[in-house]
Amino acid sequence: MEAVLGYLFIFGARILDVSMSTIRMLMVVQGRKKYAAIIGFFEVTIYIVALGKVVNGLSNPGNLLAYALGFASGNYIGCYIEEKIALGNLTAQVILNESDDSIIQELRNNGFGVTVLVGQGKEGPKNMLNITLKRKDLDKLHNLLTGLDKEAFITVSSTKLIRGGYFSTIKRK
Image 1 (cartoon, rainbow, N blue to C red):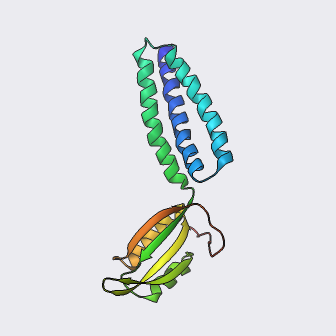
Image 2: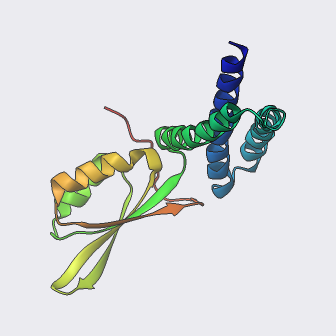
Image 3: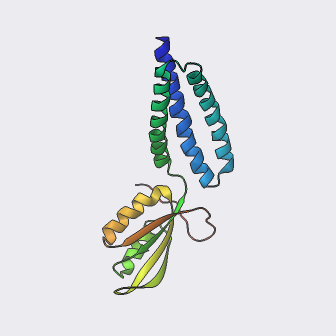
């Protein structure tokens, strides 16, 4: 029974520290230094405790298996958590297939700040939209665009600094 509890401890500790590592890396990339440092402190503490348990019982293959399974599961769970909290901002560049101003108005009516530029495509002028949004609103934008212009060309990139302009909080339905 004691061995099983040891395996569960190692497994759970690795899930926790690897998940924290995923979130910490996101904080580093976004420039959230304080949060990254705090998470890092707890992450490495948990890691060292789990590693110490494994190193002290290297003759027990169950410890190594629990450690490896916890690491793999921690990666999966960390990605899942990161996806759900969806921190950060994005910039979407949308090239509309149709030059219909109602699409732009509909995006604005749904809380998106839209800057319109006119570009030259293979088949003539095209409206090119720049939209800065919170990452958690990406699905809403994608669904709106799919319903408004199925042929729209969309690229999305991570955005670190936002200053000025229109950036509203989109209401969830």
